[in-house]
Length: 174
Image: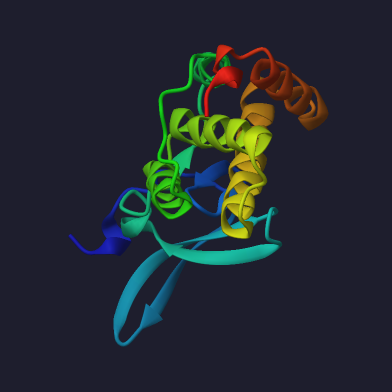
């Protein structure tokens, strides 16, 4: 079966999550011929970076592109950031790699975990630039996805997320 015969998982106008990139919307689904091979592509617009990416339909799952989660899963992820924080590496490079790996998993729970870890770390000591960018990206993805999932304004979700982070028992941990 070639990629043009593969079933299309996402539809036009559907919001999707592209791990490490952000929440986007499928703007086109089209065939493109490259080097004699016809391939179906998703054209996904990523608002977070004001960028459009072309992703082969048959590579979308491999790249971790997924639909927006159900409301119950979004709420579970937000509630999870109130949980006790497990110990994390003190060395920023090891912590950075651990967080990149979590983001690559692409689940809303792993994105929320990165937000939780880096938020609490930033309360102890200012984050290095790389970690700050990672935190900002993870927070934006979490807010964008939960806002879409729960059909609530981004500002409301941002306030809810920060209230959960502030009331977390993990504030005492390094």
